Length: 269
Ligand code: OOG
Ligand code: NI
Image (cartoon, rainbow, N blue to C red; front, top):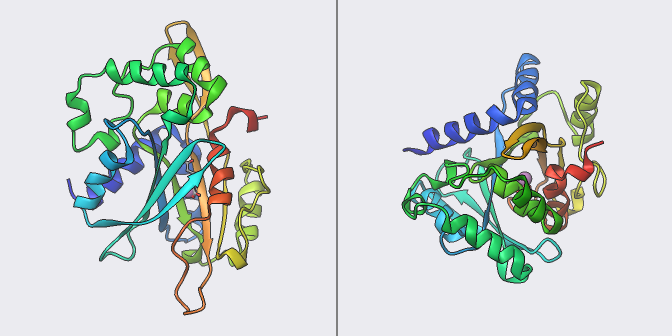
């Protein structure tokens, strides 16, 4: 699988459970915009079978290199971002992992049981990152138990290995000079934005402004019955030049901390 095949597969898988992203993408194209991706985000657990070190392999093979790392203390998350070494238009990749040893022993036990239930061969699959739930994600009881402690863990249980969001490179849009303008356009067209920490996270001084939709709701069929669960969201990033004139390439942990909440059912009204 080459880079463009992987990125297409990630988009297809994401668009299939994120109808809003497809609609926003098409709406902007109808306005004459050419959409470029700023970054794609992936989630996992730090269990050595599925940690960042495992998921990064395919990206490194395809020419990506690690560029930054980020700590999210209250959410018990750690993340790294990757940039492509030669293709400057390739989206950055942001991979985060739940730090299990900081979680309760119940949560650790539950995640261990989930991973133990898998055929170990799935963890060796080079395409693990697009494998979704390699476990049987059909227990509402497990979902609710995880949700009580970590929204991130509960999301991982239901949706697994896939793009959690794509991010539009707002700098590359012709018709929107500010993130405010783009947000206004999205709201005028009926989309709800994540307002946690303000609709725009970050400032020009921090060299990165970000906003995002609230995740779409998907009907999940558990053995106990159906439940609507937030799936994925669409993000919008505007980067500013550094003192040397080049655009800032990294992420801002305080902003990312709020962007994670785009999948939180508590933000859905
Ligand atoms: C990642 C949230 C952080 C960003 O751009 O700051 C992020 C996630 O929700 O998995 O993508
Ligand atoms: Ni993001």
